[in-house]
Length: 589
Image (cartoon, rainbow, N blue to C red; front, side, top):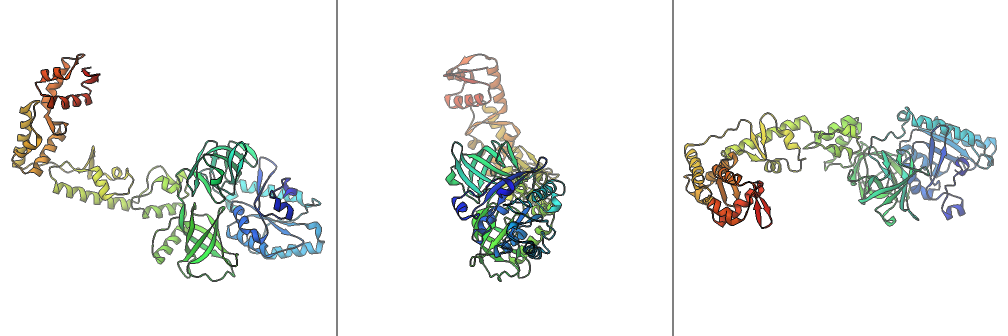
């Protein structure tokens, strides 16, 4: 890598002593024009495949290296299988140490490599023989990297199968290194998997939940104000200690995603992999994370399964993963996430659902998810599943058939309420929401009010509902109103008035509520109800004294009420801004 880019990627003392890569190394190469290629140098030794997996999942193009003096080794085949399982579509083959073999041996190695990659994404890949010692072939290799770099950054990127998650997707960066830098504090590095990060962004470390702020950014080793998809980034974080950071975490927007401990997946097993048994334990690799998992097969034929993870991870639909067995530790397959939050269904229905999600385009996936949601999906819920803001929209999405069913149910509930409580104006919104739409977004109820239902303040009623009083109710209503009207400001207890109105207590309370709702009566405080005419006359008394400062005693003289009534009346007038507290007195503004 040093001969190709000029950057030494072996940073560990043991790596330099042994002459092999043990952990991930990083380099970059400026290409003609505005392009810069970022390299993740992964270990080749079979003992360090898990480290290799932490670096390879974020790449667009593979530079597949085979040593000319050793040719294909077991780890070469495993690395090749991993690249195929990760869905890579583009690459270059480099035959290194070409100076150590003659032309015949070099050609033999080339033939062996071509045989291995036949029928794969590398079948037509350019092959370059190079030497780090003599420099032979390196200019041609750099030119090939530049050519593919231009293609992968242009319009043909999607056709090549490289990552297409751009700035429209929420930001995600799987952490592959974490360390402390003197004078700066905690730093994480990784390849930006989606979206863009900017200085001062507030982010979250999933799955741990640490909230952090971006203090600084380096992209490919240079200070930057932002870093986007495909770039190698080092991010200086505030709000977290380096001891709280580790490989396998993911940086993403605060509160947008939720980690999952169980996923629905599509499997792609390697030829020759041992038969899988029920609840097979495996090593699960996704992004930069590695956790133990239990593989639960759903069907003998369909390539779908559940994976139960030992630790929660941030995973989205389409994320690729690799499975390795426990003993011997070797790659057996991989696949991609179909549903990061699979519902609790029996095997048959779950397989059918995973098939539907897996085969649908993105619009079809949204339709299926919306159809399943009893109260629709908020835009934030679709963003959390990896859809773009344009795909998620700005309003909750709900299935039209579900809207019709919910609307009809609400009409039935409100109609029943009117039958049970004919004197009430309608059912309280909050009561209706808690009874019929528990767990639904608060705005859903308003969106369901249509031709037959109307809301007045905090009450929902049928549009056709009209109040019809019986003869005894009409008389009782007049009696209740009159009792408060003749009382003036020295009002009777409400319970006493209701007890003598001529109808039973339940209907009497409803009649009182009707008078309060119509504004004919005014509730001043607990147990104190006044007729609106009395309140109006009181306001006129005070209006004639505008600008005057007064005490409670003076108010009692003006109104002829005792302190029992004066204090609640004054507190009511304060709330209505007819009077205002001014020290130990009041002012009529």
